Image (cartoon, rainbow, N blue to C red; front, side, top):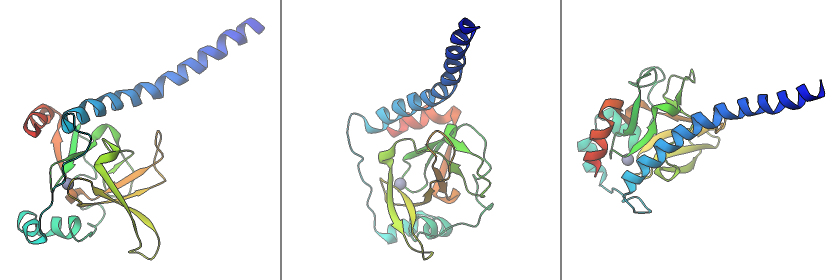
Length: 185
Ligand SMILES: [Zn+2]
């Protein structure tokens, strides 16, 4: 009996331990490969700066309101809250890849939700008191465009919920990922 317990416990632990790291490491590998391409050996992003007039001429009225004026689209109205396709989500203003569909999950909020960005340095954070209490605003770190907020009620493995406006994002389907990365070079 003692032999059985000694044998079974490590086996159960090993099986449980194997599942999460596999999924996480798959995402991590994809993230590392992608950030290698995007950074191209550089350690920092090249920031995109444009006047508000230029942004206004380039973005739709709704995109300008959300991205440059820190607005919020109504829940369940955006293009991507229920998108289940595999691919990359990029900044609608500057094109930087921000989220992988592998980290998207059903939050029930009506906004696309992810448990982590592609790379932590792609996201800029600030404290937002717009509703009278502190929330953490998230922005694209390359162009400063408003994306949404991050909350500490997300799923494993990070426990975070990046609650993002659809209109702040563009979607690159999986089959166009390679073409996008080539173009990005
Ligand atoms: Zn951007």
